[in-house]
Image 1 (cartoon, rainbow, N blue to C red):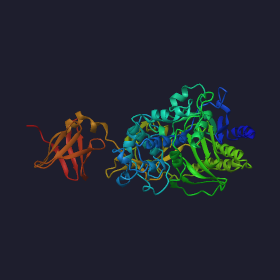
Image 2 (image 1 turned 90 degrees about the vertical axis):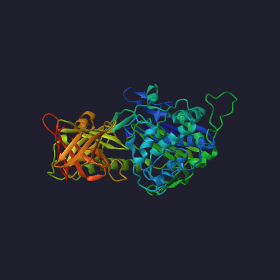
Image 3 (image 1 turned 60 degrees about the vertical axis):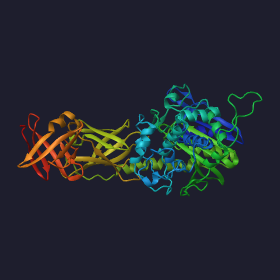
Amino acid sequence: MQSIDEFVTGQLAAWEVPGCAVAAVRDGDVVLAAGWGHRDQAAGTPVTKDTLFAIGSVTKAFTVAAVGALVDDGLLEWDRPLQDYLPGLRLHDPMVTGRVTITDLLAHRSGLPRHDLTWIGHPDRSRADLVRRLRFLPLSRDLRQQFQYCNLGYLVAGHLVEALSGMPWEEYTQSRLLTPLGMGRSNLSVGEMLTDPDHATAYERRSGVVVPVPARPVTALAPAGVINSSADDMTRWLLAQLGGRVPRMPRASGQPDGPPVMSPTTVARQHTPHTLIPEDPTFPASTRHAYGLGWLIGRYREHRVAEHGGGIDGFQTECMLLPDDGIGVIVLTNTSSSAMAPVVAYRVLDELLGLEPLDWFGDFKPRFDAAMGGMREARSVRRVVASAARPRPLAAYAGDYEHPGYGVLSITTDGETLRPRLGTLDLSMAHRHYETFDLEWHELGDQSHIFPLMFLSDADGDITGLTVPFEPSVDPLRFDRLPDAPARDPEVLRRLTGTYAMGPVEIEVALQGDRVLTVATPGTPSLELEPGHGLRFGVKGQPAITVEFELDDTGAVSRLVAQPLGIFLPKPLT
């Protein structure tokens, strides 16, 4: 393992990664736990074996272990429909809703794609709220048809843990896993990590320069990726995953090691293939053919491997197990703008296996650089229709647009610019051509992400909504424009009520409650009016009919235009 020191130091420089920590175990012993580089570049403070890093999706295996504890306690069955435990759970397809199990969600085979922007940028949304929103998120595959990585499945698992144990996932995971394992440095919130004096600062590459970035709060999605840990603490997790006893913390003289915190059945189930994945032959020495539960399953140089990465703003982690060899390694880095973590992990495995090291840096670095450069080049040649000016003033696009799963996308004007807002996301907007705009998200490292946003209009030319492909595996998502403020104001609506006449034909406009207008002819049931742009309303159940109230200079209704039926005038009160 002595050669690892020089290798890691070289990798830090080659990838421009500020700091790194590595831990490894073999045959029940810790053979490596150390740090390199800086946890804070500006302060020059070093990374140690105790420095805290965000481990991202390596958290998923902890959540699987927590679920396994519920199974061991007789509170849950792996393959029983989830609705038996969560009666309020609804997915977009009712046939899937009635059959989906916790195994389906943990193995990423539910048919639900990522839909990550339902939670990224929304730290205030509760776990229960996001579970409720699942019913509005389109599926892209049938149940058990295909592997599709999805963080939201682990959100549901966390919600299930609370429903069955009576305590939040965080508390359950702490008491059932972290504390018994003696992982005293580890914690379950960004806020707690940032108050620790020995935590790593998050870094990303922005415009070619590595800079510090805020650590992203992970609240409702904590079961998918919130744990912060150190190299030393993670040795205990590696030992537990390999089925060994974990040293007590602190270890008393003559005291035996602690009992396993996971049953052998749970560990075996995690490392067993549950969903097949097409095998990528690019690197024959390291392949993946399936997903277990919280682990990718494959082969490394003819040895069985269970592996999972963890990436979140400013951090990248790689965790690998060779279960048949009793070997485990984890690499923690404080930038998400590199592929250094797997390169170092493979080198440690080669050393522990006594094999001639493979040149994973030579394989990964050119591909990484090509991918980053390719994105920039593709953006520079995107198709833009020349001289296709926008057909209406910017103010016409301003408004609130809602998708029941994603929430409200607000667009306001700022001089000659549109300003979009969706939760706390860092967004900007620029016209591309016609009524298509580029919605740009600036929080993805060196390369921001552009979503083509298209405004929709009705036959009258009013903007009724917009579409944006926030989830690339389904059709662009439609956000409907919310009614303008006057159409939601009870005082305004009250002034619209009354009798209107077109010759001998009369209609009655009434207010139902405080916010719903209805219209009816004498002796017929009332029809609800659905607010739209300005004071134009649709008629519920009659999509071809619109009702628009026109006001005079005093704010009184001068006439009611019902398309295509006629023009009605207010009937004076007698």
